[in-house]
Image 1 (cartoon, one colour):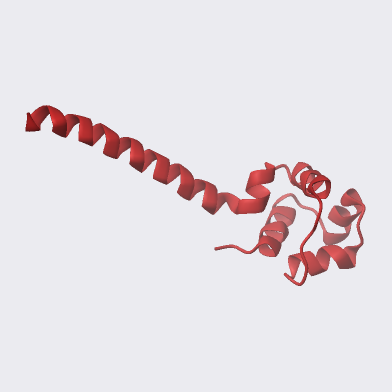
Image 2: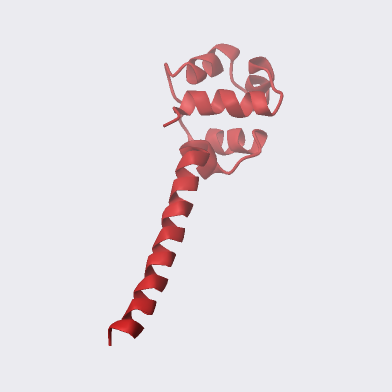
Amino acid sequence: MEKFGERIRELRKNRGLTIYELAMRLGISRNTLTSWEGGEKEPCGITLLEDMADVLQVSLRNLLEGENEIRIENDLKSLNERVTRLERIMRTYVK
């Protein structure tokens, strides 16, 4: 599972932003952002997290949970739907 700091770093780099540029946009110091990306500290405050998600062009959920978790959730939902369909089909044959 990807750690929060790693996710920030990856999203920042994917958007072509330096640590300094993202820190400036968020109104924080470069050192603060470096400590978040390094996993030493985590941001606090929903407004800051919402701003970060906005700057990084992802949903707040994606920022907090990452794509893998969302993908897993979607896969489980799809699997549950298929199992439900199979159960319906099996009921018609088991009568």
